[in-house]
Image (tube, helix red, strand yellow):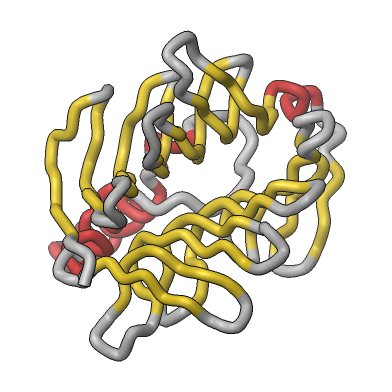
Amino acid sequence: MTRIFTILLVAVFMALPSRAQDTPLRKYDVAPWSYEHVFVDYVKDFHSHLINSNGGQYVGQADNRYALYGYGQYINDSGDIVIGKFRQGELMQGITLGKDNATVGSKVFYCSYSLTSGKLQYISRHGGRELQEVADSTDYSFMSQTFANGDRYVGEFYKGKRHGLGIYYYADGGLWYGSFVNDIRCGFGAWFKLDNDMVIGLWEGEDERRRVYVPLR
């Protein structure tokens, strides 16, 4: 009986969604907050690095072998921006801003938005594209929003509110990457500061509930 109860409990836990994507349309995989905690606990001691390569520049966490591991931002020579969570040099989940499109999610499960119209174009699951013909798809967009103080948000919207993954650019420099829920910054994220240092942790509203300071090496 105990074994059966444990299996059921694990199944329920695995089914619990993250608050980062509490919408009808499943656009990409979202790990429960407990898993997010595990990731942050693992990478919290990885320092932030400024790494130049032949193809571009990376600012963010890396392990002792200087493999990209943790929160980071990579800008290639073409101007494409990739920001999110990295593992051993590859993007686990995040946002890729290209010339014409923005993709949000992982390499195998992501949604593609047009940067011209802001509309959701399609969802890709393991190489297969799904056309979004359901009415709910029109509620999703990827846009830029500028505030009176000069700050700017670039990211996902749901029914006109910031909801999902996004990048918040501060007018005085620096940026914050993470998730929003109903226009409120909510969930795990990373603050990329002007001096290339970082703060990672769990946000609820505009104040950090938990902060992990990651100095630049």
